[in-house]
Structures are given as C-alpha cells and as structure tokens.
Length: 228
Ligand code: UDP
Image (cartoon, rainbow, N blue to C red; front, side, top):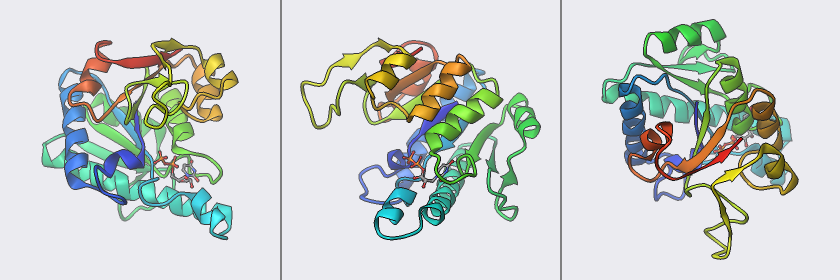
C-alpha cells in the first residue's frame, strides 16, 4: 500500500494538481508493478480541500470532510489517468458511491484486480467524516492484507521535529509504533498508527520526490524510516 498526500501532487504549484508531478509518481508506481509487486494506493486531498480548514472558516465540520473526501476522488482520477497514459492497468474504487466515475469499494473485487496485475486506487478515504486518508490507508492495508504501508512524503523519513523548519531535528532509522504515539511524532495520525500496530503492518516513510525511491524502498534499499 502506497499512501501519498494530496500535497505531493502539487509539485511547485500553490494549490491543485501538477500533471508533471502526477506523471512522475505514476512512473514510480509503474516501475514497482514491473517488479511483480501488487500495488494499491490511497491519495489524500489536502491539495484541494481539508474539512478542518472549512470548519475553521465557519463551515460545518462533517460537510467540510465530505468535500475533502470528494477532493481525494479528483486526485485518484488524475492518478488513474496518468497511469493509463503509461499503460498501467488501474481501477479506482471509492468509499463514497459515485458510480458514473468509478467503482464502489468492494473488497473482494479489489483483491481480484490486484491478482490480475491491476493497480487499485482507493478514493474517498474511509467514507466517513472525522477521519483522514492516513487512517483510510491503514484500514485498506489491513483489509487487503498488505505486507507494508509505504508513506511517500516530502522528506526521507521520520524526524523529531519538522526538518524543513528545524535544522536540529533528529532523524530516526527505526521507531516503534508506541514511540510515535507517546512522542507524538508526525508520521500518521494516532488511529492510523494504532490500526497498523494491531495488524502488524510496518510503515515505511520515505521521500516520494526522490526519483526511483519507491522501488528502492520496496526492495528495502534507499532511505526510509521504518515504524514497527
Ligand atoms: N476525509 C474524511 N474522511 C476520511 C478521509 C478524508 O473526512 O476517511 C476528509 C478530511 O476532511 C480530510 C480531507 O478529506 O482533511 C483530505 O484528506 P487528508 O487531509 O487525509 O489528505 P492529505 O493530508 O493526505 O492530503
């Protein structure tokens, strides 16, 4: 399972989807699929809309969250398009039924797609407000019996503080689920960490912006932090 944030599709744009960046990520996915690994994806929606920011501006939180989930569907369609353009078979399954644009989420059908060598993109998060796409990634990874949850970020692992703001932030090679929770390390939200822990799914945090890094991390090479 590869989880990427909506923001990682922005490239250098301040908002929205940068087709070039989507293409770069799609190529990394293609390279991993070519090695025979089954790949599924969860993409966030923060590049378009977050429920919290809607709520901060006076909107009802649940409504904002549904808008955020719809944003993830747009990102999923952009990624589906980019993968198809480079001949990777792919299906989008949404937790909110939008039958005119993608399949509904059906676990057994998703498993079949993976067996047939198709990439599956899980859109609309968990389908519930008050959750995040990190939790959706941990949930789907658990349901699909994924061997690992790879979180592609802008940095090369987990740090004690934001390395883009604090140059003294310490980088970890390995960190336990418990330490992430107790030290409130910003890897994924607490429910995603708890689900991964319960289901023994290691989380590998790496930079999706480094070309070829997804494949290296899948092979346990490259630079990443493992949460175990
Ligand atoms: N969201 C939600 N339920 C979910 C997943 C997402 O309500 O199961 C909403 C929530 O408003 C969230 C937004 O969708 O802020 C976008 O997802 P997220 O913030 O996880 O995106 P990312 O930070 O990964 O880009």
